[in-house]
Length: 142
Image 1 (cartoon, one colour):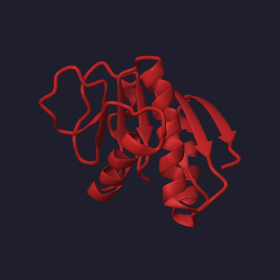
Image 2 (image 1 turned 45 degrees about the horizontal axis):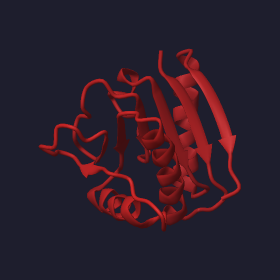
Image 3 (image 1 turned 120 degrees about the horizontal axis):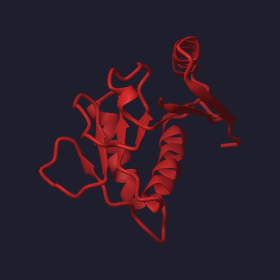
Image 4 (image 1 turned 180 degrees about the vertical axis):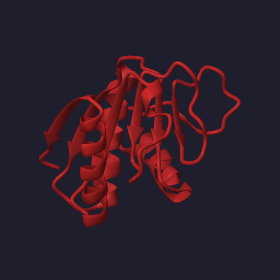
């Protein structure tokens, strides 16, 4: 059964939310996890794509936008594509429950304090809780 972590930042900024996602992706990259980052729109995917190359002065995270023909890419960003098979981590940056979330070992829900984001996050938390998923909640300082 999928383990689900909610990461809630203190700001109501999409930029801060994307930076938080980058930190989660960095950990996944270090653990060599196959990761799919689900966004709500092509513009969000593009912003995250750029940040993953630049957010860390000393490193970058190899990744691609879905769909891609690169066979060995462990980190993909998409907004309307089915993720690859055998993924370890799904990072959700959309306000919806991804239809394919249960195919993953872990799901990281990334939230900020913007009203529509936190409201949708509460609904997703209740949805997962009511179905017996293992949930953790992390209130962050950023």
